[in-house]
Image (cartoon, rainbow, N blue to C red):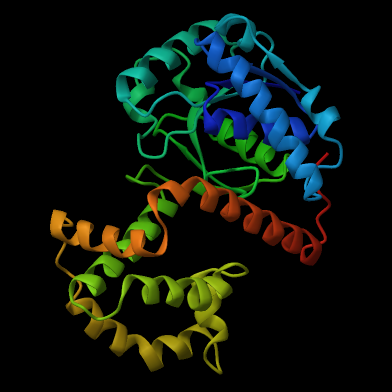
Amino acid sequence: MNIAVIGSGLIGQAWAIVFARAGLHVRLWDHDEQALNKAQTLVSQQLEELQTQQLVVDARKAMANITLATSLAHALKDADYVQENLPETLDTKREIFAAMDAMAGPETVLASSTSGIAASAFTEDLDGRHRCLVAHPVNPPYLIPVVEICGAPWTDPMAMQNARALMARVGQKPVIVNHEVEGFVLNRLQGALLREAFRLIEQGVVSVEDLDTTVKDGLGLRWSFMGPFETIDLNAPDGLSDYCTRYGPMYQRMADHQTAAKPWSDELIGHIESQRRQHLSANELAQRRRWRDERLMALMRHKHQTEQIKPQE
């Protein structure tokens, strides 16, 4: 199976790893040749690290599945699926999808990694709009497997099914978003939690550090293995309905005070930023991101073991 990855930034590199480690043939393209060559080096390094962490069986074999395309047409030739990863602007999406629609084969699925732009906004006028959709990953997708698949109103259900089957084949966890909604699902859930987190800090209820502790050493531990509905289903003797009967009124009272949706003020953002920098200086951010990825790798190894999933080759 042939995959075209368009754009060689961090997300494009990550997608190349996802497809290549699963044994698929990948053509990686970027209009910036220097960026493309740099991406090749970075992908090779990351595959070696994943092999060290036992998340890739053979890094060299995976790397051999990636070819640098000399042009967009070269990348799209004989491609069964395209994953676009260009900058998050509507004009950019419209331009690249128009070009891909004109060059790609008629059965090729064209997917965008956009995290916030609906497919209908940049595919409406295309002859092949029926095969266009969003496949929104969580960064980095080679460590966090959820992919939100969302079509436009005119996207062919078969294109959605093909995208979902491909994502499952390469070890991702596809989620179908049934109709377009800003932020899709993951960012809407994250946004709701962030809004309440900012509100609690603004009201002086808790410190920034202690709020993070509440999530990472409380809610987050369960959420690594189950979603919110399974969580509450297991947290009452007779399951979900019993939980809602017991705690529904409390959540309703809280919701009555959570209706305000004013923007985060510069003062509040500065207050939280100040507390964060007390615990992590700006020049330590890159090192901490590497630490985060190492922890994610360890977590993925554990989940592979518990789910009896072998690492992708």
